Image 1 (cartoon, helix red, strand yellow):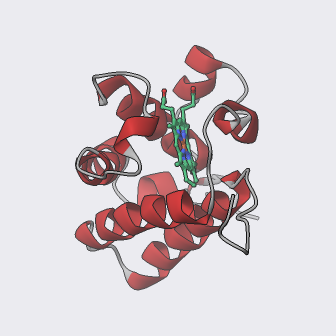
Image 2 (cartoon, rainbow, N blue to C red):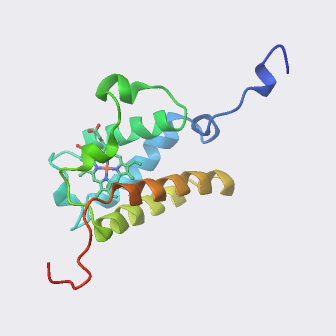
Length: 139
Ligand code: HEM
């Protein structure tokens, strides 16, 4: 144990990637993709994607060890519940992940950090799926 604590303090991923500006860049890039996506764009209730981008930025910052501003403003994340009004099947999930993959790649992060971030985003996106696709394609 180091009595001063400082040198053993673990660095959060939030700090390692460069803090808020990096998350803003990630989400701005992601929403630039969503803005032109024929499947995803109509799902967003607000005309202006800015507030949605802000919510996602604050959530991701909080998740990765940054300030708890998201919960201070929105309460407990309960993300599956908050996504319940939207029909999220495999196509929506894959479109979401495609824009996110491009956004992560644009950050040019060290590979281990990019992998940690991506693994989480991919798992979270699969978790958000709330409709079973009809295998016969007739639904
Ligand atoms: C799988 C595909 C997904 C789709 C199609 C989708 C779609 C949406 C839509 C339409 C909204 C409403 C926009 C708003 O008012 O904020 C929303 C909100 C949100 N989404 Fe997703 N989402 C997906 C996955 C995810 C994932 C994986 C995360 C987290 C890693 C996430 C985090 C959020 C957050 C934090 C909000 C704002 C919640 C709030 O405070 O109201 N979403 N999403």
